[in-house]
Length: 432
Image (cartoon, rainbow, N blue to C red; front, top):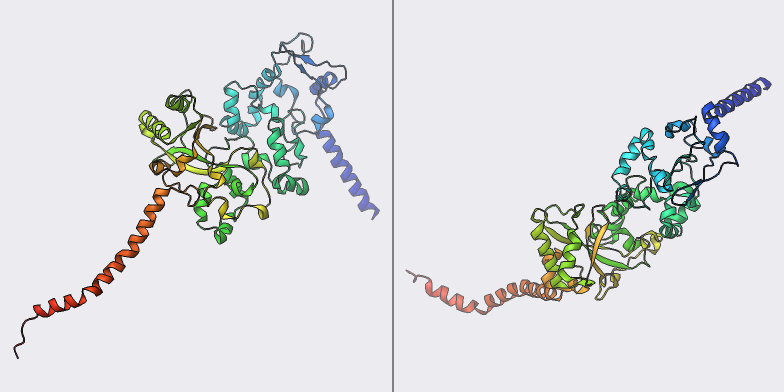
């Protein structure tokens, strides 16, 4: 027994020593840390008047994912002879972070490629001083494994999206994550970590919901009439955020493939045409909407625009205030009754170059107009967006279907005697 315990102790000590050895700094890095992990190192003052700390904790760095990365792997321009002696100008914190974007590419090619097509990267290229760079989300000196279950307050998304994150922290997903750890989705689970697209574009958010709730379509078919159409035209949050405000979004889509139209970069067609149509008016009426679409299609005949109605929440903040499935809306009257609140607000949208929606208010009367039916392409929610002319036509069709056979049978009975008499007269005389 003693021999076994001794072997186990030696093995443990050996593995611990190996782990300690793997987490030690190299000689050059130790030289860097003699200054950068010292209380005497002063913050860097940028030309913009900002104070940037130069203090790097050795202990935090050794616990990070980059503990085997040498300082010069990222700071390759640092010259040991004059570093810290010759002043290096720095415009701003933002400019400093941007200068290290290429360093991340060396090791993180896949993540950088995904980020390049994201809405964040587009904003960075446009010169936004708020769009995140790599180091805004990932502190290169303290970055720990994303597989570790950190407190949700440590999620970097909260730095920019504070209001949204507060809403998420109190909804069904946020509360479940606090109580159950990794079992509930966090920001990156729905929006992806690097390839982030505008939430209003396409069906990305709905698909994200179905990615986890794979059996939801089948579950809805049990009780929800025409559930497939509901999934196509209604966002999940519309029913699962029962206290939120809703609206109808008339998306501009391609008449052939039905894909959402995206405005070309540098060609502000949407804003230009909407201003030329009504100037600074807040909402389009029926004729103005028709004129806008006509003008748009004259300029873009290769992508003829039609409208595709979609029920959604009015703000992204409310989309992060999801309740439990027991509290979800299941009462059809919420939408399918005259004057239903979700149909009192209407907006026309087209995707901008970065995917974010360009919008124009539309009068709710558009949804109840027969002349707009061609533009709405059948977006007709019985009971709430009820078009009266269609209702009258529907009644006439039903009456016609019922009255035609009734009239036929009645006429057949009424004229039976006359038909029999005519038939008898046409019979040849008997030869007997």
